[in-house]
Length: 209
View 1 (tube, helix red, strand yellow):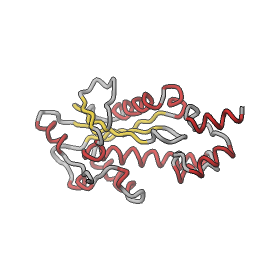
View 2: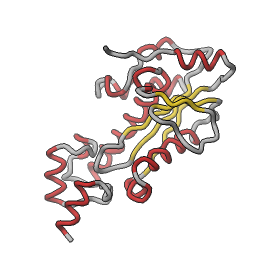
View 3: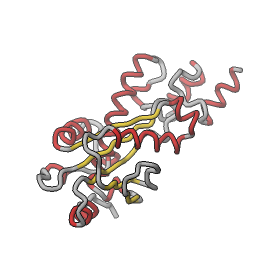
View 4: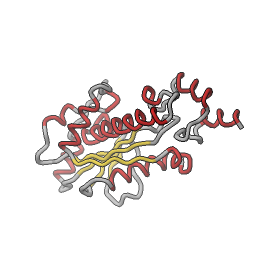
């Protein structure tokens, strides 16, 4: 059964006196190359625009429509974007690097949130009350909005990196392990933005050393 986002979590927090509630989500854990991104979005409680009712988890939104939705979110809401590089992922591990990206997204909000709603398992060390929500990007409007902003921001970066490191097809697959990406990785070897701690990249490096 398909799940749609609701205001249930936000409305309960607003009623409890938490004015600035931020939804947080990440994108880019699975790719072999590029940064992991996170976004934090605070949707206004009193002047909420009806447009937010159209927002869904970024995975359920067409790639052609996502940039328009992200642009509207960024006009109507308070938002921040954070990332962690491939080098940070190799140094810290993907889980901790994702937390770093999330904390950076929160730090870049122009308003410090009173409460955080997080897709998944939470964000350590923010000092802000939080509630992790499994499948939060499908259940909660604030998190769904953050998922779209993060996805569009990362896609844009990968399109730019495609021209910096040509031949891998980053603009098309965004660093995910598609067949064409794996073929290019074997042919060209890892680029500076490949995650050298990830299995397929490690295997290519091992064969070249």
